[in-house]
Length: 254
Ligand code: 6PG
Image 1 (tube, rainbow, N blue to C red):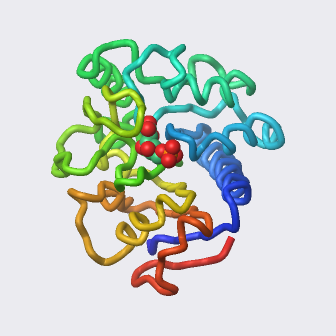
Image 2 (image 1 turned 90 degrees about the vertical axis):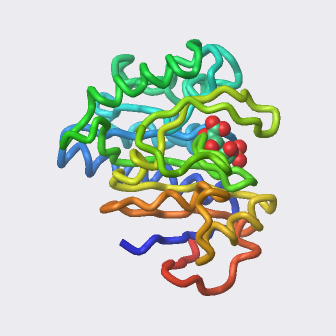
């Protein structure tokens, strides 16, 4: 399926669109498979999305059938401000009627290799078709100013055989020890939604969406769902260096 780029005037509209995708996809997945498997991202991009789902959009989701996972996690305790679990728990999960048993967090309090091993086991228990990990209904991803996504950083090996990896990477002032799912998992998803906002992402977004394929340097380019759909949600600022037309990409104004 051709990837889509949806451009929004501001991050508020973008977040509302992202929330609508959550509602649509959860309703569809629950209708078809009686559950909804979603992987969340960390960083600042999903904050408003979490708030919307916790408040205005709360009643539109059948929370009892939602299973939440993370595309990556920083190895800090779950109560630490730097934990992706903590961030989504504060803004969303503590405010909606999702069963505790449906929250599948990475045990960030462990050392990275142990946390990665533990998460591989969690993913295995949701495996379909012998993959060793679930086919996610929806994956949200952010993108760093260096083109990283989840905790797949520039220069990291992209020919990976494992669905989950322990990683050490310095980015801004965020915790360096991390666990990440790899493109093996993301590329089996039914829908992957990237969110990128702000002028600081404009240069790297233009590079990532160009036909200059350099997945070693720009890990976001590693994401290419095999049978699923890829949608980029960006705001005007992030889109400011994009050409009007991009080969292989359907562009629409949100
Ligand atoms: C993390 C992330 C990471 C994030 C990007 C973008 O745990 O840090 O999942 O991949 O999505 O760094 O972060 P912002 O949304 O803050 O720009």
